[in-house]
Length: 176
Image (cartoon, rainbow, N blue to C red; front, side, top):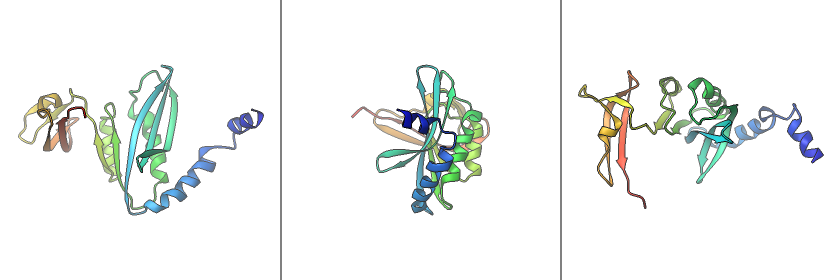
């Protein structure tokens, strides 16, 4: 326990010192390749929120960057997780084609603008009450465009969050 305590409480032992160099070396194999990342949160004891960007590979996810903050909800502001994205980005080799997957709650215009600036692809699960403007100029909610059971729809050139153009896919999948 004494050795573990020394390791855990030693200010010289940080992710930047040990984990990041190992990750950078490991990720060199992805130079110029497609990289799939996830952005997610977890809440512990209704008191702490873990914000995490992970690499998806071989059916597993490997943490690239994390942040823990006192926050009783999984819904966090862009300003709370931006540094986690920047850290993850700094670990990736050059010329990767990155796709970021995120769940509801990450439909922030600041995030999407940042992803576009980085030339990252993205797929964010939207809430049903998200307003969208279709290519024909009509505005509706995502829930109004849900496909029938066991079907999927793709809507080209919709506008979300007032001025962000994207593609929208909706699906109604039966449980397997």
